[in-house]
Image (cartoon, rainbow, N blue to C red; front, side, top):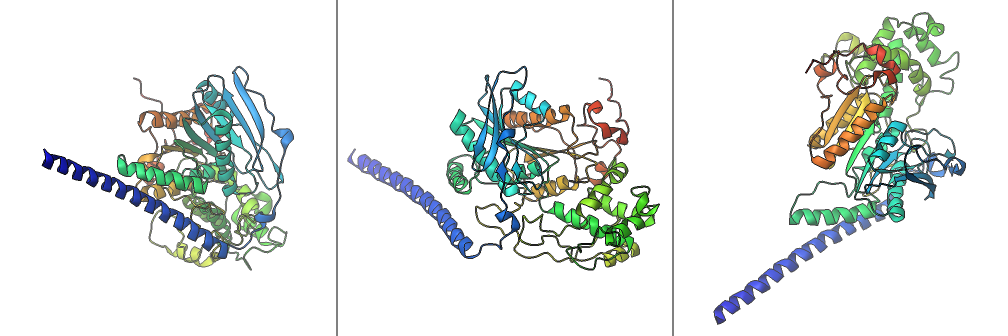
Length: 507
């Protein structure tokens, strides 16, 4: 009995020692994390990026625009106000299910007034009917300031918890630039995948700590629409579109950024258009010339490859893209301190054959080359970049939906995102969907609701919804691509450009 008692005592001491060792290891990991943060803070203090014009711009919430009415036919409590230099709107149904959906708006222009959008009406009505509360921020800054969008959206989520109680789950959805906000927000701490068991508990504690230090919010699912899921590669696309037009027209820029007279009658722009389209400048955007057909083929590849509706999309979007971005300097309208666009060393294609033809070799030689400035979008530990990069490190269900014919935020943004997610071996968390429309964010109510509802059902049940294989070039080129998730044709005017989808087989 004495021996048994001594053994039991020894085992007890050993168990306590192991437990204490585990605690000290966890403390060491936490201290290491804090140490890294302290080191990062020191490095940030001594190695701040160069100032950008956006740093000094002043914005003011348009408080007269904030008030709004509860959706007719619903019993909901509405509130609005300002928080941390941003305006907000909140709507909570009386039968609130305890869950919250954050809504991230798209690009709001370059004005000083900050305004708030409510979610699109079909989406908003569905949220309230299902018992979800929603909250939307103006962000604290305009321009393409995604960092402000993430910070303001997360700040509003924390304010909601103080005003109404902490939600049991928080989801996020956004459009266009708001899709970029969504993609960046769900990759912040504490949004990481941790294993089950004791290791998982330690992982979650560390993630929670890092989330508090970085300002992140734990999200349970996301549904970006027409999103800039390729982050800064959108601005590479704008630059390539313009430089490719000049190459096809046989016109070379004298400098970069483009000269002030780019759009003048004697500038680059009229010459390029007059060469690419029949009838000259006055005939734009009529049928392309042979040079114009080359640029059209180039645009097809950089915007997402062969897919239904592209011909109509090019005719619709070409003028906007030429006028809007031909003379852009690559600093994202001053959000960055210098030029982020670079194409040195890139080899461009005009068809799906990877071999470089004589025509492609001549095109590449004619392409004006630009070298990006270093350090204008510097990464810093636990801090968002000026234009946050999205890396594909998913840990929650994401349903990302995009129109095939969008050439403003092209379908290639979804393909870039899907490749990045795949490279991180996180494809099980992503469903990509294509719909048949040409306009930017031109969705029917049914498409908005089905993507959002399917994402939440996935989070509820673990059952992954259907999607499109957007990385399969042959599948994308099929004439029925986009049919599976396009609904309510009468609400989408540009769908006529795609032709009818095959009739469903009778059950």
